[in-house]
Image (cartoon, rainbow, N blue to C red):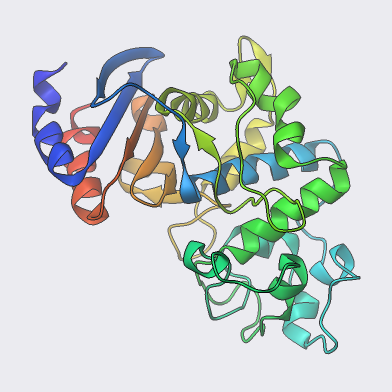
Length: 289
């Protein structure tokens, strides 16, 4: 299959591609590695792992999408709780439709942020819009969703996901960024290799089934990866062309699932021109599957 993907490789190498892996019909059909695999920061592709953690927590009865944030975080609320915050739910944490109109807890802000309590800081940001009416990509929602899972489960996200996911797929204990108070930062900072990221995509393609065992509810995977509202976004997953969905992080850390082609395409890169890379991925890889 190497010749079929040469056009993508030419673009990818110019854009900082470090590796790509393609599986179709449960068989690896192509891989390219500019260098030996190492664990790399997945940036916002980490959000999709937090979405999965929420799915497990719901499956185990630890939380519900309908719970209100004022009930989930009663000790972390600002002195004045507006009507929009009162209406916000766990579901709104996952859809980027929380109602806040500015990004927060992004990488450049975390490097200089003086506040150590990210939960209280996140909830103090004005909820300027009614929840589920305004899309604003931010790290607040996935971060709070991750904290909620950790508080209900009584452990950090890595320890929570080890027996539920990582162990099943043979992924050894990974590094994941923590906030100043020790909570796993569910919006970013998970380190995995290309092959490990690719296993995540394959797990989702197989609707949460691994080695003949149903681990995560297929209904959750279907619900969490479909568009929620007008925006091409599910529960911390992006929607894309060819009816695909993907975990997608800064500098093009991607695991894309294309159910209709029974395929997974994953890549890691140091790319500063993501639009060019993604266009080439759709045109020169996905279109040829």
